[in-house]
Length: 41
Length: 502
Picture 1 (cartoon, rainbow over the protein chains, first blue to last red):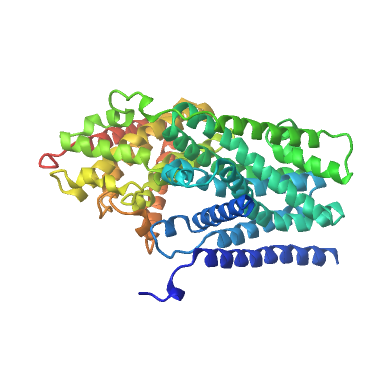
Picture 2: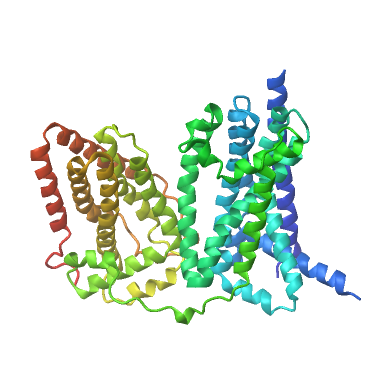
């Protein structure tokens, strides 16, 4: 029998995926923010 | 009472189950690991949205910037959601499984609504972030950021609702199969329309509404403009417009219509009348059919091509490209342009053939496996004949558009040459099939390591078409006759051979 840690845990994967998504959101805010300030100055 | 926490737990369970299905759809359905695609999709499309916003940022006025970027975000969300919307239609078992569980109707409804908003929000907000940040400089206020995100969410919801209404109507009036077909067709049309809309829209944002075909009179009918005006009215930067009214009314109207249709009863499947006689492509292929076995093979391939959703998704946009090329051609465009458009459908065939052994309904392959014939050879012949039959309506459609643009005189020989060339080449192309058609699980599909050979074939076909067009332009009479000869030779080349399949 497989140990518990090897079994897929959908809920844990879901939260991991949402955290990764949050990082992407951060990048999508940061890049235009830098663009805006750079163009303004 | 424990009603509250109980219902909350049920909603939570439904939400996480549906999100897992959304994120890992095909991969987890069969119990495998698989990887989620949402994050990478948002990353790639969000970067596109950033490029679009940055391109239009400083050179357009506030309304144009907001409307253009709302349209861009809305179109991206709509296209990525369309694939998922048909899921419930295609897997009614999932729906029935949930309905038999001890979950009350109100709880189910709340969970469905929350899931739709969450899933739409995850995508719309992610894609709208770059344009929302840059909007702060365009409108000179930080409030533009939350307002743009909210408007992007509402525009996406409206667009999704607007395309859902005809699909729901067809589902309730004609049945599920017609609805799935319509969803695929709509997706194809939207894909083509977004492609042209992107180019035309960016031009209109930078140069003013006159640069858009139809001008401001047409743009006034498009929802993103209403929401852009509504945003400006909310910020107090614009007075006396009807943006808020139009945006609110369209949202309420679409929601009412969608809910009204959703509660209508479904049409029972058994009530659909059976079609009599052969479908048109099979009738077109009749002169080439040597034996009943061949006829069976071609009928099988044609039926599967029509039913296979993934094939339609691949093939229809490829036909849309030449149609769009001719439709948007300038009146004085060179004949070479039209020759290219006529030759594109045949140049695409080698690419399509790679995916032909893979089908969602691959279990239907027992039809070929049980036949007393060699499956690969049968597949090759059947595919060649099926595509040869399908070339006819495609080229007739191109001929109609072509003749409308530059007259029947030059359009007819170009069509004859392209059709003849297609008929001559199809049996040779079909030899690249090394597995029976529609026999493999689509999950085992791997992109071929190199497409250089196919690209080469496409280039050669286009070069031949261009050479024929150049010759036609120089001396029309003899080359028209030659095009007719090519058509006849192509037709005869597809005739059954002695000692062939029986």
